[in-house]
Length: 82
Image (cartoon, rainbow, N blue to C red):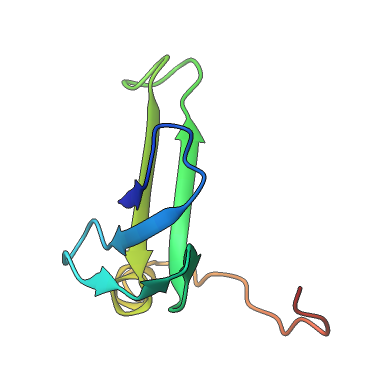
């Protein structure tokens, strides 16, 4: 969950893991810890048709969740980090 100073979401104040409620470090509008941010708009043919979901996971919760996958996530090293 992301908290901003205003409705326009211009300056990030804090990020809280939606799974474990850990407060992630945010300073001067920038997140200083790794997290997974997901925004998804559900389309047709499912039980969530027409809804949108948004959440954040700390790195530890992300590792726990993907550790339960029957098919591992694809992973590769990036040469450039922007």
